[in-house]
Image 1 (cartoon, rainbow, N blue to C red):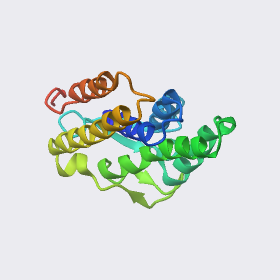
Image 2 (tube, rainbow, N blue to C red):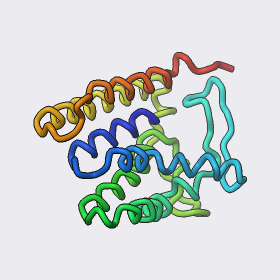
Image 3 (spheres, helix red, strand yellow):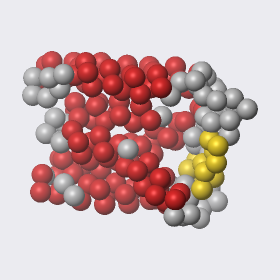
Length: 184
């Protein structure tokens, strides 16, 4: 749900306009930004699964994406914004944690409660609907984009080019189409 995370970021920004856009958008992707180096360091593991939605398996992602670590990373990242006030700190923390909440819908039971926990969470929309998840995410992006646009127009304090922002998220989503994925 790469594009969906950014769409959520736009909606979060629309709700709390005083939060810095860069902080919110970096926040919604922060867990994935940790995941990459953690894989390279051997702390976490993933492998490609061509022909099986979503095209990869996240074998061990406990240090970046578990419930406990998502909460911890939310606090750590939000602490960087402490000088901007409690509302902004809470907003940035929620932006980071929103990643876990959205992954919970998509992931097939690979989200641990904490590193090493045998209890795994995930509703598995990627596997329940190998192509339907894409339409679900598109609807989510459109809803978040509509909210962002409506708030941008109503407040006039951010999002002067809101259609470009929503358009970029849609392009990112189109590039993540299951119809473009390699097959086995």
